Image 1: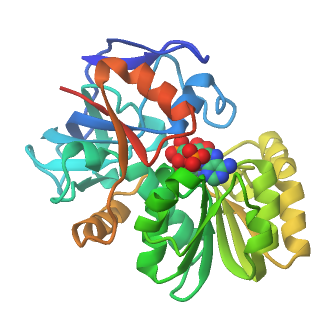
Image 2 (image 1 turned 180 degrees about the horizontal axis):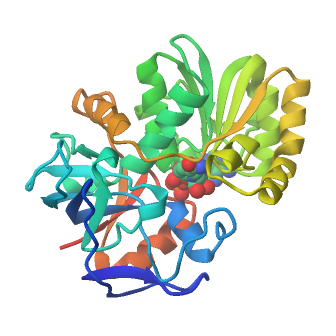
Length: 332
Ligand SMILES: NC(=O)c1ccc[n+]([C@@H]2O[C@H](COP(=O)([O-])OP(=O)(O)OC[C@H]3O[C@@H](n4cnc5c(N)ncnc54)[C@H](OP(=O)(O)O)[C@@H]3O)[C@@H](O)[C@H]2O)c1
């Protein structure tokens, strides 16, 4: 079958070629991929940025989320049958959605929201699970609380704003001026143009911040939190909980501790907490997210759809950092 393959780490690596059909285990569903979402994570994996923390055996089929149709199921599968339309983020050990077919554990799969086409559905799993695990999990966001969501016009931001509003929070976000109408249409109460305004001078007494930007933004975000507030970052630095979670050895755990030492100490001095999130696959959370999509509480924002043959171009567009919502590749 055809797939987008990385033979060696590096900026310009990646090609479409033939790979063997996936092996279907007892608990797996085999899915015909119809569309796959493209994420900054794909470029970072291809470039080798995560090779120390998440080592993959090369060649690697790239792609971290998709929507498609179940072709067949392993003998232990209970929830799905051939013909079901599904969407999913495979476990990090079993990525590879830029391919005609993929086998995934049924625990990581959910039925596609009935209101969405394949391309829209493929744009949701990774960013919606990230938003869910950051806001509901790490930040424990509650009705009436105030949250700052950075980069509200990006893949994660567009969904996180809607989820926070659904929870009943007051939402501030950062983006550039041309994207302010978009983030307002998603429900943001306050939209700050980061090119002309400093969010840290405008916002005060927030309960939570979701950071997806650089180290300077992360540090400044501490200033907007009230005592007891929570700073959650998905763009690093990784923290010791994450290191333990992915089973790093003692030496690497100490490296990770050092990486997050400064921000953790600054947070503690201010009476707030810092945590890093690396999202996980979850079919059950995708079912809850799917219900919110079907109820109209969350809508996907798809910026561009590329044909599968142009996967490298799709990755290059995501790398510009200017995507409005998500980028998707369509498989025929
Ligand atoms: N740890 C995890 O589990 C996890 C999960 C998902 C994503 N991530 C990471 O989170 C980051 C964001 O992911 P994403 O998919 O949302 O990215 P994305 O869709 O590529 O983000 C693009 C958006 O970011 C906005 N942006 C760029 N610079 C900004 C700034 N300085 N201030 C405010 N907005 C800015 C852009 O708006 P303008 O064009 O208006 O500038 C654009 O709309 C990436 O580093 C990704 O790897 C981590």
